[in-house]
Amino acid sequence: MRIDLAGWTREATCGDHRAFARLFERAEQLGFDGVWFNEFRLPETPWPYPAPLLLAAALLARTERLRVGTSVLVLPLHHPLLLAEEIAQVDFQSAGRLDVGIGRGTEPAALQALQIAPEATRERFEQSCRMLRQALRGEALPAGQGAWTFAARAAMAPAVQRPHPPLYVAGSTAETLGFALAEDLPLLLSLEPPEGVQLARLHEAAAAQGRDAAALQTRSSLARYVCIGHDDAAVAGQLATLWPQLYQRRVYFAGKRGVPADQVPPIDTDRVLREQFIHGTPEACHAQIAALHARTGIAHLRCVFNANGLWTNAQALDAMALFAREVLPALRTL
Image (cartoon, rainbow, N blue to C red; front, side):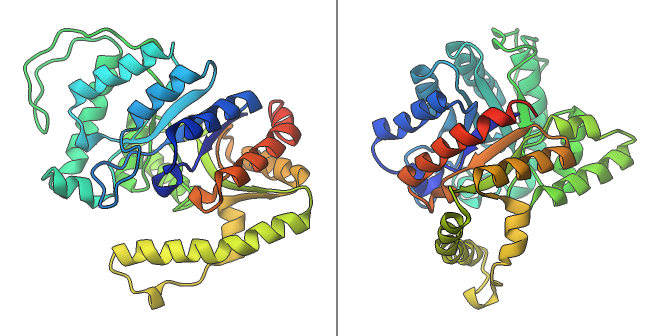
């Protein structure tokens, strides 16, 4: 299996840049395969790394094997000609260690700041995705029409990875999942909604298109929180402190959508553990990952050891070290 890292976003990225970079140098030493970073441009609350390709370039320069991915580049915000050049350059600088997750975006702040109408984002996303694939393959581009208009362009230098850097689509709507299926692009499956919802919609789209979703599903990537400890008591203690923090985070984001705090339901801990977590001793974590792989066929897992910033980097590193020592070697045989 491929085991990557995720979860360093928003406030979890605050602090000294050199210390932050050392986290991922250590991740490479521990044997993890990659790390993924989100894009939040022009947010209401600023964070240190709004541009994941810039961060990717910095970390790829400090590592030798670790892959770095974007989860995701919000395509409606970027002119595809410029974005294709930037992706190809980072891919070249890293000798082909870049993964590119793309999406339509859900944060309204950047759309409002750039005066992009929300109803225009689907056309911009789909047209940009198709153009990126052409440009990164080193193909000439015909004149752009629709959301992106420009004169015909000669081929640019292709990316190192062929036919282009791996492209993944993030999304939960039937339209986005149907587009990914039609374009034969694997998915970056999210924690919320759980992947079961997304995969059900994918298979519905496959039935409507007369396609088989199984091959695309197995090439996709799953995400899970990871809570690991030497014994069950240690894990239970970690989780007991996490539930109130997760609930307050849900209340905060619900408030941004206009939902009052008293209308946010309590966390169903059993369901969340079942649908969003790998948890327990090293033996239990291995068994859960093996079962997840057997059920979905997916062999690419993005592990969130820091609870998306609710656990400290020191806690995350301790968990990563235990996982790398006791679980990671066995996963290579799955």
